[in-house]
Length: 64
Image (cartoon, rainbow, N blue to C red; front, side, top):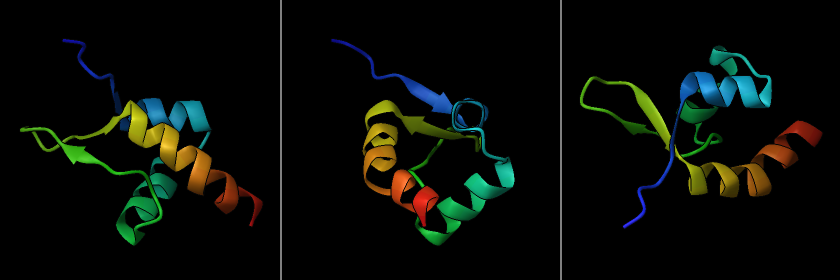
């Protein structure tokens, strides 16, 4: 069984060169990637959700 890679908020910000504020606003408004909460309340993102979101939404938001 292969465990799926989870990314932290910081990793997403660093890779996409966006601020925590922008990412948080996108998530709250429904325009961001699907985020899951750990038992400690931290957001985590599944790799496939990030890829789908990036290909289908992020590029469009960036162009618009």
